[in-house]
Length: 258
Length: 258
DNA sequence: AATCTTGTGTGCACAAGTGGACAGACTGGA
DNA sequence: TCCAGTCTGTCCACTTGTGCACACAAGATT
Image 1: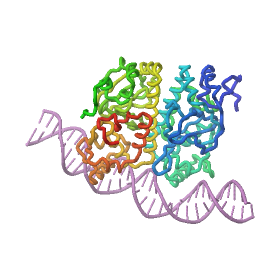
Image 2: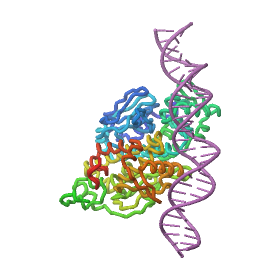
Image 3: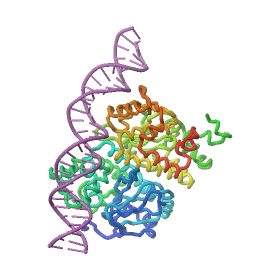
Image 4: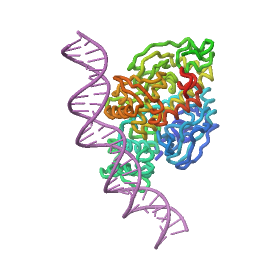
């Protein structure tokens, strides 16, 4: 499956994170001494609100993190997904701050970690590195803006479809998402029974199948048709701003399919 | 009303924006040569999606801007409010990027404007200036995260109350908001008739009065009681991260009332 | 004073989503 | 192999919010 990767080069040995792979050799060399890769499991917490942010985490491979906003009644609300196209922790704040959100591993996998101070030092030395991080920060911002709008006006059906697609794009898994209905519901901040009903209607229309603890997508275009366009809008911004960094672009392991 | 301000100093002559006033004299001196103040009217557009971001705008006094996310059906969705506690345009992206959102003046008033490149140059020269901007960017991020969560789980009644309070805090107007029901509704991304009904119920409970084209708040605590806590959470983060910048704090023209 | 435009209050039928309940179906251990 | 725990499908009564319609009110204009 990696046959399309021709001659081996230095990039191939980097962690499977598109942001890190996007860096020039010189820029990556500034970070390389400080990169450590650690494995995570679903539901591991990377940060809690108020934590001192010390490490930037780069999701690698199928790993996926989400930002949770704590709520008065104790149930957290999920906001955005970050996979191998990006990074979490100190990206905007540059680190000398208490975390506002909780950051949680949704799908387990490796994360490359770099001390925030080292990243800042590297940014001071290399404008191009600084620019790439600023560009990614802007993309993340776009993603959150779009989520805010999406939550305001799109139906649960649209958002469910959107989320399944977004998760698949990031993990690289072509047709399944390892989530229970319950998890999917809390993720969207909605009731479980209604989520089940939506999935049920998708199943009836041949769009997907449901397994205990996971969802198998049978007709991706059908799912796209039922999703809002929020994902595409964000993806377009990533493409414009960070050409090649977003996983569905050429940096992805699946070269086809825009 | 400004009696509590003792001896005049250089800060008093700066534009009435808390972020600018928060800067040390040395840091402000780096920006001062490039600051121009321009007046705006409600509905002026500062940026449209895709625009090349050239200027950072600092709302002054009662001026208020919002970030709009364009939507497939043409109606924009409002996301966050920025008043004299902050700034819009190139704060996170550092400017070399197409704008993702539309930025619109909600309540007219003066805006201080500085070229993004000049701001970046000043940030290169002064770490403390850089840190303040990074801190504000983090606060803005927190604000958007909270909005995303809020839109996902809070009722229209709660969000209506929240919005009225947030607008008043920023403009400094103690008891009125110059908005029609229609504007308030589109702002929240909801139907006009339901918004009218919510305001009607607030009126019936003695919380506010409605005038043609504006809302008069009669019982601010009552309104607080009916709002979600999203505003307070964000305000707390501002306080922790940028002490004194948020308008209800000591930098405000109304020294009492935390 | 008559008129026009825009905003406001309210009624209604309907759609979307909630939250609790419960039976049945998987699955991982003991 | 059986049990216990979790996940799933579905029912139901109920709340929230939509979208349209229409009468009326408040300014603004002439």
